[in-house]
Image (cartoon, rainbow, N blue to C red; front, side, top):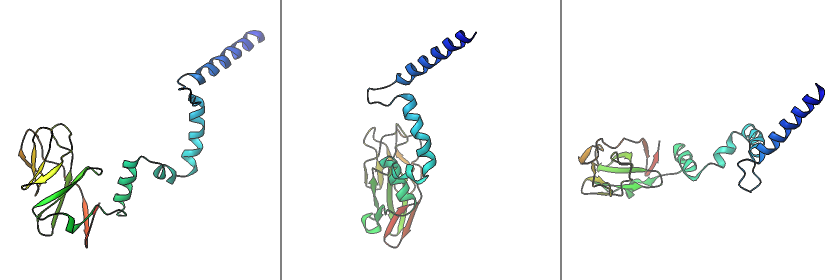
Length: 161
């Protein structure tokens, strides 16, 4: 019985060693090696993931706290607007001092709108147009209005809420 248990342990050890090598891209990151350091990193500092997050997450984090202004109010034309591609948001000013924000993702097939002209927010992919006052569909094929986004206007600064 003892020799069978020893053989079993040997087989299990060998299987574990082989499994560790599976999925390696040659960069030395085996499955076991990559999971072991992750545990200390996760528990070490909750702020570490924020600092090492993707650029999109960093932008969202910075703008959500109000730290990074999106634009100055003077940069948004009355009767028009500006598309902020990186943030996937469009800010409009339908009337003087009345600022609105909408998702810049077209509700037709997910393209990003690329301009604001003649009172509409325009999608370059299939010609959808949305009204700057409320994001409603002015011309299809978009089936739904652009979702609203929350912004804060404080003095001359516009930030994402």
